Image (cartoon, rainbow, N blue to C red):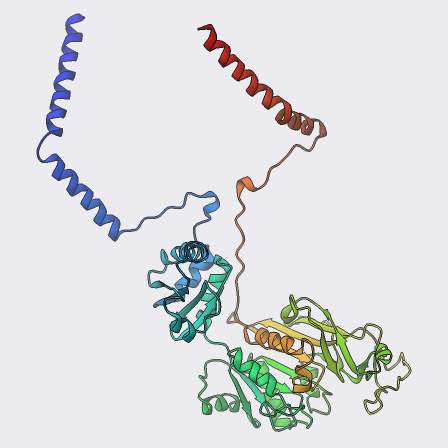
Length: 481
């Protein structure tokens, strides 16, 4: 037995000696260097990343990957951030962490940081207003993004780039509509200036006799004919011809959007349009008897009653409407349109068929057979999803002169108008990504009162007692030895 143990010990000793000699061989160090170099080259050319976080929180969702796959080609991102140790580096770190997740899937996405303090001219040329602003370019298109730097926000920007530029606004003229180049009180020069500042494409049409004229007008004004324009009927005072009404209805049937400032459908020649959209627009005006105590016309409405949906979401400014008509749309069987009531007014008033604006302070009696009690809806929108995924939107405002300079300078009217125009034009689809919950974000406590008391007293008294006892036992053991 002793001889076997000595033999085993001898073999182990020889093995250690051979390993030591092999390690001390002159080719070991160069071999290790070559192996390290090879691993570095492989790591440079091949990128393998695994997400071991809870709920795979650092991995792009399926929806974001599908959007990236539909964007072939180069995506250029310019982030305007300073290199300051606090705010600037926070922006850079947040943007880099977000974009890198997309770059792992889309290798042609390039990110460039630009310091506005070093390149102020470049920041002015790109009209950068805030530090941390991102400019995303794709195939001649440009989108801007600011906080929050989330996957949902960035994916929706890429989705807008996928669907192309927004459709232009085509204002119909020649029938008494509010003119964009008119600087008088009944003109719309203030709105035209605001639309240009917001980057909206605007074109005026002197009339259209057939469907293709909408696209023809855009072509003659050097607008790209990629999408149907958003047609704007800005309060006509003369009736449209039957051929033009047919062209308007054809525009809607093709999926085009519409903004309609209505006075009376019959006086505008658009009764058939209102009927096709199932809209019931009152012949009489909405009046508010409370105006008499302020000595203002009964038809001069002011309101802050908004539905909080569509363009009125998070809108709280007071708006003013003159000579407004009530708009009602009843539920239709198998209706593809979603009805969005937006603005209501005259909570204690009514829609009067016998009121005459020439006598603005004469209060007519309420007739239950012809009049309807307030509040009355004076702005309403329709929305439906097209087969392409884009949204077709129609917005109806019951005040024909709402776009005029006299009205746009009052209260929040201009802000409401711009928010409404942006909402109708920005009809690209969007996605909502579910937030992956953290496992440790919720603590489940016992529902029974007895267990709650045991848990509470255990942490408050039991845990300190156990720690004190463990310390005393440790101290006692040391002193005994």
